[in-house]
Length: 223
Length: 319
Image 1 (cartoon, chains in turn yellow, blue):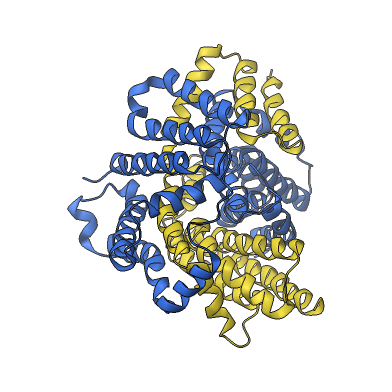
Image 2 (spheres, each protein chain N blue to C red):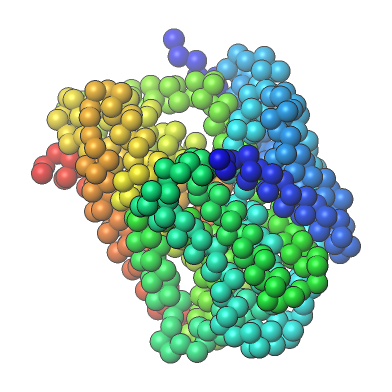
C-alpha cells in the first residue's frame, strides 16, 4: 500500500507559491508537513532539514561575486556596457542575445559552464547591453518592455546553459543517466549519451533565436 | 589540498561583510534584520559542521522567521556614486572597465582547461569536487585586488556596494539552498517512489507514442515539482523508461536516457522551484514580477518539449 499523504507537501508548495507567500516560509512549512506526514517525528524532521541545509551550503557560495560587481558598477560598469553597444551599428537586443545564446551553448558544451551566469555576466554585462540596444531600436522603454527585455536576457542564459551542457561528456547529468541505466544492467558510454544531446541543442537554438528575432520586430514596431 | 572548507571560510567572511554593509546603510529601515540574516549565514559557513543537525535546523527556522516576518528589507540608496559620476568614470576609464569584470570568467575558463587537460589534476592541489568553486573564489579575490589597486576606491566600497546588491536579492539568496534541503525531506518521506508509481499507472498499453508522451510529460511535471531533473530522472527511468520504452518497446537506450533528461530540463525552465535559475535572476535584475523570467521562458520550453518528444519517438524507435 503506497502512502499518498506526503504528497500534500507538494500541494502546499504549489498553493503557497501561487498565493505568493514568502517562498522561504512556504518551503519550510512544506518540508515540515511532508516530514510529519511521512511519519517522521518533529525533531527528526528538523534534523533532516538542518542536515540538508548544511550539506548544500556550496549552492550559496556564488554570492561572493557581488562585492566585485558592485564595486565596478559604482565606477560605471553598466554605463560602459551601454556606451559600448550604443557605438555598434546594427546591434539589436535580439541579435545580441542570439550571439550570447550561441556562445553560452558552445562554452557549456566544452564543459565551461561557470564562465557565465546570472551574477557573473547577465547582471553586470548582458542585461545593460541588451537594454541599451533595445532603447536604440525603440526609444525610451516603458516599464513592461524594459522588464520583458531584462527577463529575456536571463532566460537566454538559462536556455544556453541547459541545452549546451549535456553535450559535454563529464557533466553531472550525463553521469547520472549513465549510472541510473547501469543499475538496470544497461551499459552506455558518456559519449553515446552526449551525442544525443546535440539534436535538442540545435532545436533549442533555432526555437529561442526565432523568439529573439520576433522580439526585435516587436521592439522596432512600437517606435 | 584546497577543498570546500576553504571556500566556506571565504564565503563566511564575505557574508560577514554583507552584514556590516547592511548595518551601515541607514536608508534601510530593516537594516538590523538584514545584518542578522547575513550573520546567520556567516555562522552557517564557519561553524555549520559544529552545530549538529538539530542546531542547523534551528538556524534554518531562524532564517525563515526573519524572512517570513518581513524583518529583511533594502535601502533606498542606489549607489554611493551618482549617475553623473558613473557616466564620467565610464568615459574616463573606457572599455578597460570590463577587464576586472572579465577576470572571474577568465579564471574559470583557464582554470577549467588547465585542470581537465593538463597533469595539474595529478598534483592533488585542489579537491576535484571543489574545482569550479575554488576557481570562482580565486577569480573573485584577484578581481578585487586588481580593482582596488587600479581604481583606489574608499576602503568600504566593496562591502557597501556588495551588500547593496545582496540586499536587492534578499531572502531569495538562500532559496536554492532551502529547496535542496526540501529535496532531502521529499526523498526521506518517499515522495519520489509515490510519484513514480502514480505515473506508472498511467501507461497506455500498446501505443509507443503515448508511452513516450507519458514519459516526457512525467519528466517535466516531476522536474517542476522537485526543481531539478536530477531527482526526476532515476524515478521516471525506473517507472517507464527502462521497463516500458527500452525493454518492452525496444527503444534506443541512449536516446531514451539523454533526451528524457533534456525533456526534464524544459520543466526546469517553467518552475519557481528551480530558484537559482528562475527566481534569483528576477531579484538580481530587480524585476517587479518575481515570476518574470519564468513567464518569458514558457514558450521556448513548450516548443522545445514538443521537439524533444518528436526526437524521442523518431530517433528512439525509428532509426
